[in-house]
Image 1 (cartoon, helix red, strand yellow):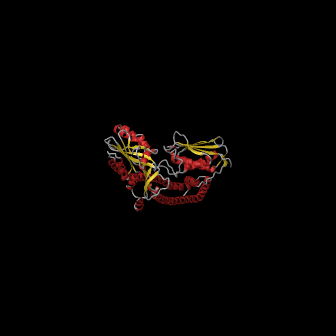
Image 2: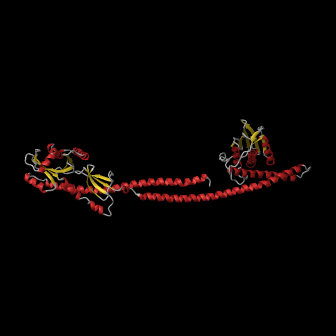
Image 3: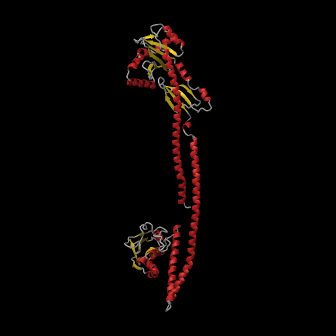
Length: 553
């Protein structure tokens, strides 16, 4: 197989593989994105369940604190007894309707816990934050409440200075208590307060370690999660203010700096907390299975296409070898025929001379001899065309220029065709204007003209007219024009008439021919530095051949 078909076969294999690989990568990326989105959704659902558990626990604590702060008797000893006996509490406090701190009273003798509370809650007392919050709860319109809620959430998100109080909004009845977020020390603290019917404000500051441990108790145990054989390799954690880890569970240990696979912020009063979960990076995609499937598909496709290309190559090569053998056989036969044909022509011409010396030759003998000569010339042209076409395919044609007068060569060819043209009644008009010597291959010129005249003989004899014109352009370009008055070329003939084996019609009545005559005309003209084209003609067809004179002889 030649290089061009092999290149096409390589493209036939590689292009589909490239397209298949590209499409596979696109599908694999799309699948990875969908799998990642689905897994992140599942992880978020898991965090949502954890969020629900924590929210339920905080709601339970709110109910407990609502009951605990429902106090209308503010005896100091009784209040201290409540704080001392309830591990959930850090400190109770009471503010009267006039916004004075009743308990713990800074003017009385205080215990250690009360002094610590007053020291860190000074801004709460001095700025009257709880009192203002109570008034806003009763009088603020919904828009103002929403604005206060947004502000509080922003403070929680950005963090606050120690001793800063931020109100945690919840949808509750106007008479219900509410949470207050108290930033002090290592993190935020919780205060639950309510306004009693007598106008007093009773609040409970929860012990941070206690309420955190209560929340953690509702979450999965770390060791249990690690021991579960069916548990997915993951780690979930509670992070405060975006950095401080409060609690984590799960057997997976992400590397430092790894971004969470899913995260979810908790509702008030735990808005400073965020739930995060981590899974190995490979679990967020389809993993290696998709890659293996893609590679397997490409390998199988490569094998299939390569096998197909091999079969095509083998079949094409076999047909090409058979075609080459047929062409070689035709060439060998043509060569073998040329020698006896040359002898036949030679002896026919000798016989013609002998008959010329006879005083009264038999008319039948002369006619038979002319038939032998004409048919031998015709067979010689056919063999010459076959050999020329074969050498053209092998690129072995060569130009052998000699100094000749082109018109003399044209006259010799016309005289050889004269008996046939006269018998067919074709009038031949000669306009020969190339009488100067030029370096042209005479055999090549003869073959060109023989094919053009043979073309008129086969396809334009009904026009009974042919004109042969010669000339010299710019002193080095020989021009030959052969015109006829036949049926002319079909509509699509102008672009295909010089193609090998093309015929204008497949009708049975059409003259027989090999379909390579005009192809040889153009090939020989271009080999000689010129070209063969179709000329303008009102009737019939006109062919123009130009031959460039050789620079060396």
